[in-house]
Length: 209
Image (cartoon, rainbow, N blue to C red; front, side, top):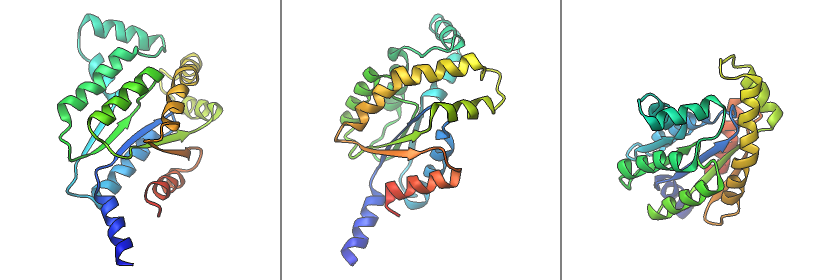
């Protein structure tokens, strides 16, 4: 019995890596906040390096420059940003912020198969063991209802449709790559539940409790 308890504590104390991925409107941000609270409670001595592609892009767009102008044109058209740009942004975060003794949470990446392969090389470079992919699985119809119900100016019928189109076309292959990679623990989470139910499923599959 004592051995089992020690193993559980040891597992919690280990630096963990989480990759959150899912359709727009699936609730990744809320679940990341809840997981972060759990990690801080369980491992107060281990920091969290949270890298959000969306946050990086918004910060990038706030600056002035030719690259920023071209990138903003892409987002205004509802299209997917090129691999080199998003890879540069989250890659820069890793290079500048990784210390080696933190939990790592990645949000919004990878969005293409090529990006998934580059991310895998980064995971291996930083010697992150047993990374966990949390796929917030919601249907296209569910995502449309959620996004259109938010009332945001950019959540037009055309804009939402474009985002979901590129998810189906570009992101799904990246998800399949991670799912079929034996070095990752892939968790298919039913995102069409209440916040509490989704969190419960994540906690059960991550911690076994």
